[in-house]
Amino acid sequence: MNKIVPVANHCDRITLTGLGAVGYHGVFEKERRSGQPFFVDLVLYVDLRPSGATDELTLTVHYGEVAEMVREIIIGTRFQLIEALAEEIARCLLQRFTAVRALDVTVHKPKAPIDVTFSDVAVSIFRSRAGEDTPVAPEGGR
Image 1: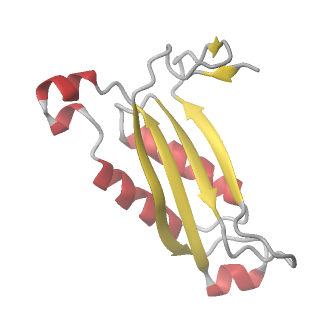
Image 2: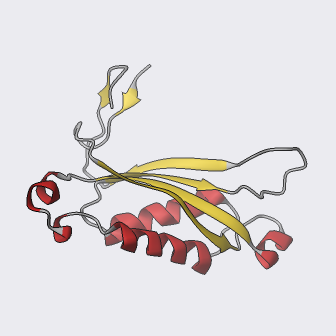
């Protein structure tokens, strides 16, 4: 099986896990009215060599600002689908943080209105900037 290797085989990553806030997303009116917890996991593909060599924050991505932006998107937008929430997060982060060449976004909805026992529902997307190549690497890549 092949794996997608983002941005020209250069895979430095900043990972944020479990960013959470109460949001008002859902197909059902009750979800949009009452709210529920949403959690986001991010993998930001960034060339960390310049910041690693110089110890300069301005040469990397300020993950505190990333976390705040994600929280504001969860709280300040309303979507029926977590797929749309994931797209909005990806779009906003790529627009705001130019050092991010690509990203993985996973949106978790652990209190989804499902009538069977479950621990989590999540969607995951990968997005990259226009013009960034995403070659297919042999199995075991990444």
